[in-house]
Amino acid sequence: MPTALPELAGESRIKVVTYPLPRTISLYTNLTTPVLSDPRIREAIDRPALATQVLGYSATAAEQPCRGRASTLSSMSVPPDPTLTYHTSAEAVGLMDELCGVYADAYGAVPGEDIDQKSSAFRERASTALRGVNYSLVSAHAGDEMVGFAFGYSLQPESGWWDGLSPAPPEGFLKETGSRTVVLSEIEVRRARQGKGLGRAVHDAFLSQRAEERATLASNPKAVDTHALYEHWGWQKMGIVPDQRGSYYREYVLFVLELPLATRGR
Image 1 (cartoon, helix red, strand yellow):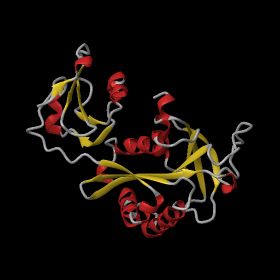
Image 2 (image 1 turned 60 degrees about the vertical axis):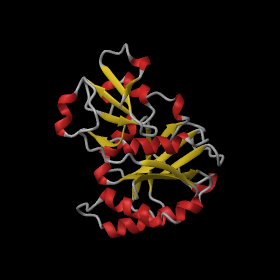
Image 3 (image 1 turned 45 degrees about the horizontal axis):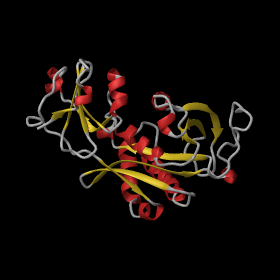
Image 4 (image 1 turned 180 degrees about the horizontal axis):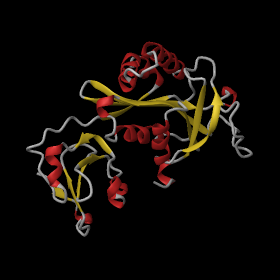
């Protein structure tokens, strides 16, 4: 049976209960539907209207009337919580087909784009990233199925990552030491899991283990909804760079996020 967390007993708008699920907390509020959240519970409590940082679960229409009170899980069909796992580059080699499968599923068929060409370009990027300094991968599995991932590496001075950045950044911004910046090279979630917080969980899990001062990522300039999501997560848009050899788009928007995550505002 669930048990209430005593330290939250004075919060009239929130009922918090814990279940015997590793690293999982269930929130019930009168402002949001029930969600399953990772340990960043304090953020959800402080900002209940944004309490949507879920790991693989969202309330069905039948559960909507439960706002403001705790419900039992006995009558609910709860999908398995994704398990987050860290991998080295050597381990990631054996996961390449699964990574490509998640990527293809995440994008699906987009009018005007060749999914085979796009998937092929992703495989090439993902294979190249394996050779990056301090490469790491975070995978999310629900049962035996990979449902999301994020990977990246330390940006090196000779990479040319910032070449052609417009508008020109502040003095000193472009300096790279090999340990100053981590590239969040890819972050993807299967379509059935999108919009349920898994992307944020994978994102934070990856970045929380990095020792660099800041993170950067590149995005399709037309993906304005994705840009808004990144900015909601705290990323700052720095400008546009022309494509590099082997890139899918002709130009990219670059974002930056200060690290560590624990010290930045939410």
